[in-house]
Amino acid sequence: MEHFDHIIIGTGQATGTLLSAFLKAGSRVAVLEGWKVGGSCVNYGCTPTKTLVASAKAFHTAQRGAEYGFSTGPVQLDYSRVLERMNSIRNSSNEGMKEWMEGEEQVTFLRGWGEFTGPKTVRCGEEELRGERIYINTGAKAVIPPIDGLEEVPYLNTDRMLELNELPEHLLIIGGGYIGVEFAQIYRRFGCEVTLIENEPHLMAQEDEDTSEAIEEILAGEGVTLRLGAKAVKAAEQDGGVQLTLDKDGKQDTVSGSHLLLAVGRRPNTDRLALEKAGIETTDKGYIAVDDYCRTSVPGIFAVGDVNGQGAFTHTSVNDAEIVLDFQKGGGRKLSDRIPIYALFSDPPLGRVGLTERQAAEQGYRVLRAKMPMEKISRAKEMGQTEGFAKLLVDGNTDRIIGAAILGPNGDEIINMFAAIMHSDIPCHEYRKVVLVHPTVSELMPFVLDGLEEVDR
Image 1 (cartoon, rainbow, N blue to C red):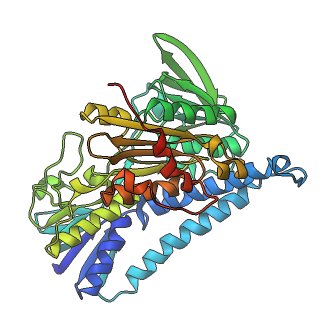
Image 2 (cartoon, rainbow, N blue to C red; image 1 turned 120 degrees about the vertical axis):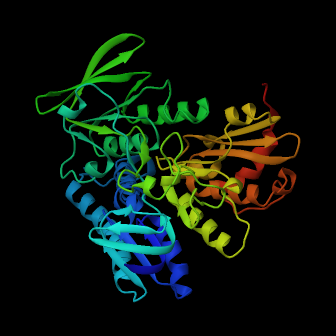
């Protein structure tokens, strides 16, 4: 049995952060991977999907040439080139990490699924390893909803969707969260007919209603068919495609398409780990239970990334790893101190940080709210991107920003400014004094505060 200072199970984005630190410390490390190196972000998440977002935006903008004063003639999509570009980018990331690990003398890289045999031991294939510290970074996988007949039809999840070599004639998408919304806009812009089905009354149901409605208006304006408040209850094959039976308020009808994409959420990837053999506890939703420092119920075993249920993004996974490393050096960084932040990479993108209005009200804040539509921001008008708005939420008792939603050009970048403001505990009246570059969208953000009004509970 080989002995290691550290064993890392899975190669999602937290692994790179951990491994860099362990190598600098001269540690001996084993890394196990039973699927694709790089995890979901590199292979079927951020890297490939945002590459598609960029291609779809460029194609869409080219078709709007007349609005900007130029003509290019008919614009045609070469989907094979789109896929070639996407695969080139994601494969370079995948191969780069693989070559890095294989080239380090301190690293033993094993291809295979890791399985606990005890609190300090892991089996990978025919080999059993012992580690002083073990890190579970196995991520999450797509949920398959309980729909009658679903197993009899050729449905897609995100990784299968990215392997399609031809454009769907009519793409049906079940799930109106950020994955479903992004794919709906991408493939509609590529010229596909798209129907997006969401069981909740609104898309992006975790957001405030005004944000959800604005996103719905953007998608509908581009020709995406929205079936909101409708639940898929049955699936059947039809002429080589799929027919779904939808139920809305007790009334049923059908919708047919050439392809079906499931985007209804993800669940922790723990099936193969044999957690019980190590005594590792899980939550009622199946995630590995961790404390503020990503420690599991077993000393010396940590869980980072999506598998611990404390975040579902690359940036939270990387931050988990940073918290673990800080803890091991005696620092005080904690999961509970992390301010939630993420982006929806639609066009325009949505950047979100902190609380929604609903959450703030439920937590008893005295909420002040200010909104500014993008159509009132000069830079947005100059770019021809006036959909959306900026919304700031302030604690009326402390003068601190407690939440922000930026739906508009560069919203995914602008939101980082508010994360820094909130983390640094800067009062609103101080932020209002900041001078920012003109002409930009972000320069108007301090001025949004001039419209603060108290929200009735």
